[in-house]
Image (cartoon, rainbow, N blue to C red; front, side, top):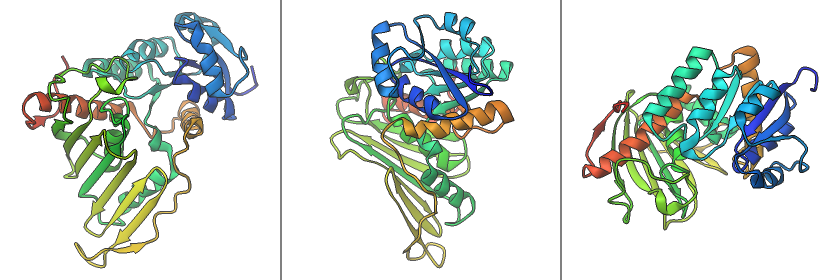
Amino acid sequence: MSEGKLRAAVIGGGLGGSHGYAYARAPEYELVAICDLNPDVFARFYERAELPPGSINQYTDYHEMFEKEGLDVVTVATPDHLHTDPVCDASNAGIRGIICEKPLTTTIKDADRIIETIEANGTKMSVDHTRSWIPAFQAVRQAVLDGEIGGLTRIVAHMGGRRSMLFRNGTHLIDGVCFFAGASPVWVIAAHEQGFEDYGPVYDGKGGRDPQYDPGSTIIIEFANGVRGIVNSAKLTPQLFEYDLQGPYGRYWLTDRHCTAWKTEEQEGTPIQTQPPQGRGYLDPFGANLIPAVQEMAQMVLHDAPSSSSPYRGRDSLEIMLAALISQTKGSAKIELPLPRD
């Protein structure tokens, strides 16, 4: 073991490769192990993590890994519907910090089980909604909190392309709306894309890999502080990801590559383009985005720092997605939150 470093491991060799990349390049960590039920996936993990094959210990049973490796932090990067057991088992095993792939879970009952478990054990946890750690997104959020545009009234979010999927990638879009809104959602109205009208009230994404099992959807979200979000996840549109944040005195238009700002001289006045908030850095296409996430987790474990992407907000994002499914089945009815647990 490298002296003074946190021992980290990854469960899930597919998506987990980007997490392995981040742990291996964050000075706070020693990456010691990878676990996957399918040993054939290990080669893909090493390729994505840009590590020599066989350079860390390999397991097909995470319980054995927990027993042997003396872990401080673990990533859970299993398929969408299989997060709950490894997260809870890691927490119960005494692992101090957990980063979970998004979405947090696919049911409210599982989300609450995770939250109850980590609270009981004092485990630190973050959910990989990656834009939570991107400097430009953080700078815009801080500018909103500082009142630069008079607070928020509307957030219009759009994601395009064939992988515009409510759960698999839409969770990033919806969690970003929650990130900027800064309050709990209170009701949801939704209408799915054509072809998904009869999708049903229960997530059936089959692990999140195939767009045909995960609908795009147009969603209206009301938050407790009066902010209203309008989310459009649409296949058969250009591949993009953007937020339009509007308040009484201005607007920020934010993408994964750029931010444009406008201000007004008076409430509801004519907007004039101005300098955007000075956050440096946008979305990187690979694991470099997760280096700030794993470094923040080190601060959470060692110094009780807060999470930029907590499981509580992850639960809010999940509840919005589940409410969207229910709304569609009820003729785009307004669905009041919170949802029942069962």
